[in-house]
Length: 334
Image 1 (cartoon, rainbow, N blue to C red):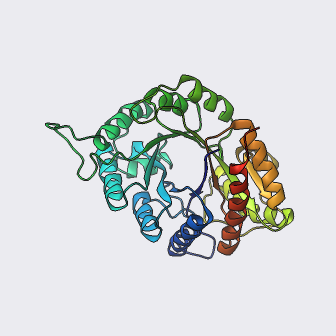
Image 2 (cartoon, rainbow, N blue to C red):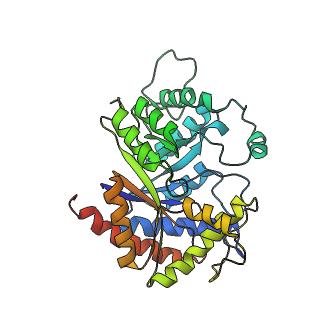
Image 3 (tube, rainbow, N blue to C red):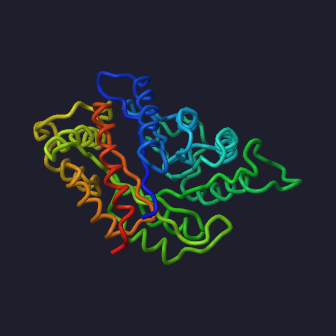
């Protein structure tokens, strides 16, 4: 593992506002930079009252402005919602303002329900257009082509690193075919993790953007001084995910000691499977669990995330994780 990074969904806790969430995001990013995280990514979601990063490029700019060395990017931008030229201009502008620090991860899902996807006013072309849109976007960010009918200003010549994000074999195959880095969303959809990473590595074609495959996996992390305390903190995300699966999205709930009264067993089984690529506990416990994940999947980079209701507890969780991952990164491969 070369690097460890952080995915922040800018959660809006119950009892707080989006303004609070965005202030927390900037504060967490400053800490993450000091703790040695390599990247700080934000994600595009819409019509979700518990997530404040809908205008992802805007939030990336705020985080980049508040930090100085950490890479900042999108994990990701849901490309079906946008014209490739607009994304190229947005991220070209970010790269011009913060040279060498901006990443662009692309997903092919809308990141919301279909009614909201229509409200975004992007023509509904379906997933079949995603590869063409990616190629078009890459061209806008590449070296200038004199005489091109459409060019991105700012954008062209910035060479913003583009990643393909995915939770199935489709993204792995596309990333390998185009020769781009690949990030798997195993923090909420782990079923095809092993197969997707194998497919990507085995079918990768070197390109002008990347000479050899580079794979990132994501994992949930909830760390505290004791295993019991960490499990308690994690209950907020479990409850939020269960409500989302049940069609009741909302702000990030306060933690609870007993979730059985609200989450029926079938839903809990689904949530447990979806969030199974994770590490929860004290420093010793998450070290053991993260080491197992790294040994099994051999990611070039591990991105961690965790929705914790109390901001100070969230800071402490990522601080503990950074200490553990710094040590694991320095360990020789088994």
